[in-house]
Length: 360
Ligand SMILES: [Zn+2]
Image 1 (cartoon, rainbow, N blue to C red):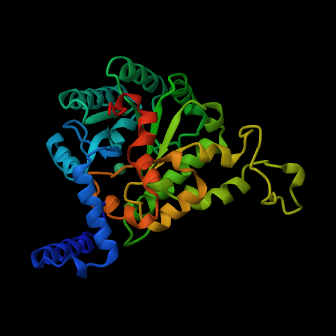
Image 2 (image 1 turned 90 degrees about the horizontal axis):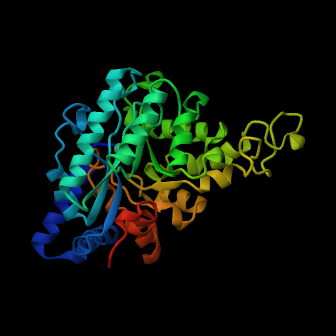
Image 3 (image 1 turned 90 degrees about the vertical axis):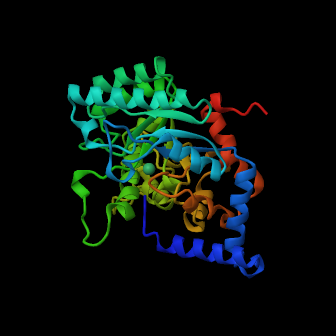
């Protein structure tokens, strides 16, 4: 999410000064390529942004309270985004497990669906659920898909109480699987872990830590194996998942117990299989999709590209929580080929959301 804006401001000032002087040659190579990347975007507005937030009058988290569709469209046009999949970043009101939470989810989804229909082709909807309420969530899945024609669902990395692999929530994932839908997993800070460290905002590390908890909980509890038709999207280049994948594999409960040494810890040359993960931890984690919002820096992208193939990469911006530049300006430094960049920008998202498939 949003960080200190001073670095971006000084970069913008520098670009402005250089443009005024008509002396592009004095720009460092990284800034030149970022500038070129934006210009290309302007002439070829075709990206699909799978991490893009909306706010509603009934559910309004602080930083994006003032959101309007026009504000998104202006930035999308500026940065070459053809279509944005709208999701809500999460709000405790959805987790009360009450009728009020069901009503709130319904209002949010109807608001999002209206934005989608008001601007044909520019937005899609990843609907919210009253995520603590299993029966209410299953009903909302049906309504969102059948009546509102949602493109998928946005869930939070926990529901204020439990992480998504908890057996109590399995019926929700079984329904997602039955409908073969896309499920976008967005960070949400559980009450256990708010403001744990003095001087360090939750958005700096806790968002990615909780996303990693959520994915590990889905893996270890067998949800990823039991629900193979869900297409999960992990935010921010996979949070810590690509870096921790080896450790997650090695600690799969009971994995390769016959090879377990007297330390009780399995050796690292096994595949992280058990009865809940029969195909192994890497198999399940490599099937997920990973979007690059505010994590297109060379370091997370290098880790991600070591772990998954180009077919799993998606473009996201986290707008309006993050300015689009924070993602787009870093893509040129990642060393990705034009083919991989095209797959990331649009091609892979077309597979997930066939209605967005380009007619050209
Ligand atoms: Zn977000």
